[in-house]
Length: 439
Ligand SMILES: C[S@@+](CC[C@H](N)C(=O)[O-])C[C@H]1O[C@@H](n2cnc3c(N)ncnc32)[C@H](O)[C@@H]1O
Image (cartoon, rainbow, N blue to C red):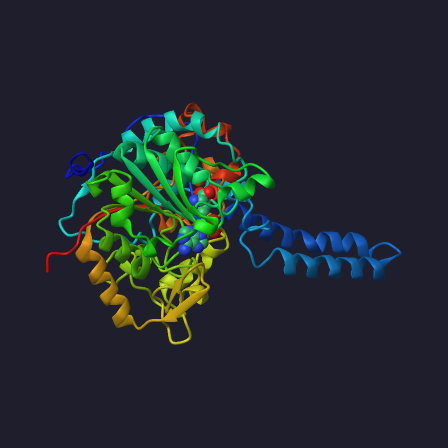
């Protein structure tokens, strides 16, 4: 698996000409500003008409009430609609001049440096081909409503990578109702799976759809063992695995990715890991690799907590449009600690968290960089004018596989058939390849 995965090739930009929708975007909506100004200009006319009638007092009262309501509910926002309303954003995008694609990554996309700068072998074109194949598979999923589990973007990412890497054994930590087990099975119909989860997915069958795999060893329910407590040497022997480079480990268990999972995986000798939630700084319920590698020397890394800074201003503005955008108050602690989540290293669904110093945060990134061979973050499947996603802020994400405006391609791949809610779960899944540092 090792050799087939790595290559120094870079992904060429996808060049298919397909655009037929002019997505454009920034946040200032001039048409709305103009509308507001002309409304203000119309008020005296209404007032004059009303005041000439017999019920002048009632008219003045209603007018005042209406004016006050307008100022309370409409004026402070650039548009007088729900800030997360996708149709409102579509109007905004259409009304502005800048291309929406340029919005992606505008606040920087932190990433982890690797030992030799090796890249994954797959390209954007491979991802597009994969999408074409995966959409009809996804439509047959047994669990249609997977709230709290993976949506479309991450299901695709997991399926694509498992299928590319072709592991002999897949280990999953965090199964919930079994959707990700099902995805792994679609990618590799004959490979063995080991699934660890405190509650057995079969328990969910009593209440509705769930997936239990026939060729999977479950460490679940009364047999649950945490990934860090498993005697992996003995389990691998039992499964006839002698080459750990043939194993893929998938974590969706919301544990501190450094203290728990990365170090435990290294100790066991696993090399290929996928983390479902690579939470951005200031978000999420566990310390992620993206948070760890968010350092001043990385573009988009290190942050300003100064209330008048450009970053603060931009973040405040973006918070109005994207539910998971992070503003200064969410980013910064009382002492201006911006790393992790306001200076905390979160763990175990945020059931435990610990203050860390900036020095410790910095040392964590040095350690991570010393063991990483490959680091790759899954881009979103498509831009928000296509998916109508309302959550993640594109300013902190890399460019999507299908750019805004390419509706023809989006439709041709079958993506327009899916419910829009399945695109709302993007939290930057990553693939990493690791090996113990030589020093
Ligand atoms: C977000 S859900 C997983 C969703 C699933 N991968 C999917 O896509 O459908 C997280 C799961 O992790 C489980 N979990 C909690 N602590 C865990 C641990 N220490 N090890 C493994 N799983 C854990 C939870 O019970 C829950 O089922």
